[in-house]
Image (tube, rainbow, N blue to C red; front, side, top):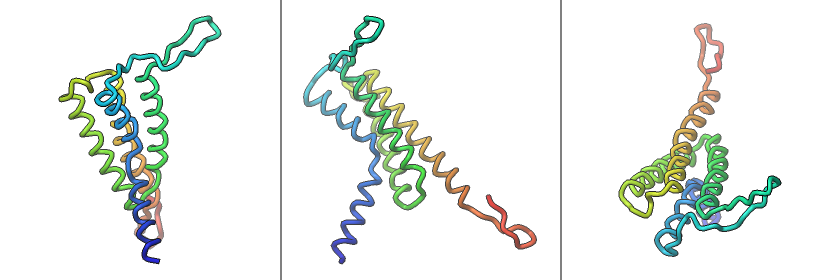
Length: 150
């Protein structure tokens, strides 16, 4: 029984890990370990106009980041201790991304800048949505003892 509670606790905090750490980790793996250019074409998409659109490694990474940002925004609608841990970890991730962008030469790309902006939107949007959700759940007692929604 204690093992199940411990596993549940571990899973709860794993769910609090910001999803935007995934494109951040992939970026660093590609930039530092694989040493590949982010402008390298991954695949092409033929368009009706006859033009062929080339999709690069950086484009795929940014697209992944946008999709994960959507999931992060959905995660921020809950209000619990897990949400607070998620917000703190999102702030830490954002700060690490800013520092890497400023300091590391391989992070000075438009792809990394867009991923950093997505992290900023995650931090600000997460706090905004959590605060608005919490305000809906608060009730105040009026002067006559009646309840007034906040």
